[in-house]
Length: 227
Image (tube, rainbow, N blue to C red; front, side, top):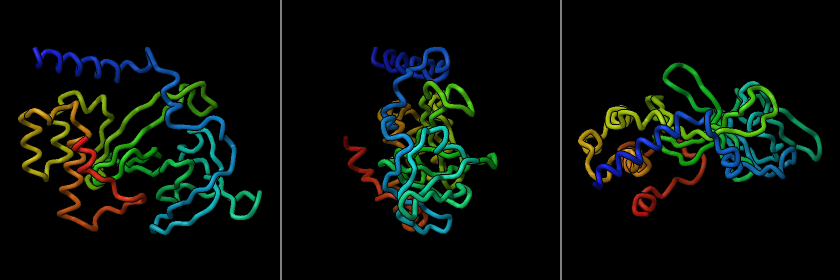
């Protein structure tokens, strides 16, 4: 019975992920943005491609503008004087308590995302406007996981399909964890994917302590696993 309900939950999650355009929660994206602050200059900082951080005020715009690689990031170095930054010169920026980074993928492509948790495998949010290239009525919320070393990435809905194989392809170098996932051991299934990622990130940091550049304070992965 327990396995039946676990499987049922997985099916529901997958249907939800692939049926977003049919029944989208039009309010969900508001958890990640502050509509009342649109077009205001807010304290933040930019991270240049060389890793250098620079504090400045940033114009807080709608997600479709902040996440568009072709549109500049509007900053203020002097009071009320706008200075645009080409996003191609930035590794990331931080505004309104959110970190945005340029995520690269194995298909030799990239896109801007909102970071949930940093690490060798990064968790992020992609807000997709219902009207492309225009002011949208709402955004669909898509969770993305990316191995920042191999550049392999999955949207969480896709990760759920054949989870053992897909997750294994992201953690292949951690043999012990990889086996638990492939064998679908209790606590190492799709519903535990965030804990699996945290375990991998802890292991990766122990083996390669300086390989990942953290733009924010390093997450407490063990606390996340325990909770």
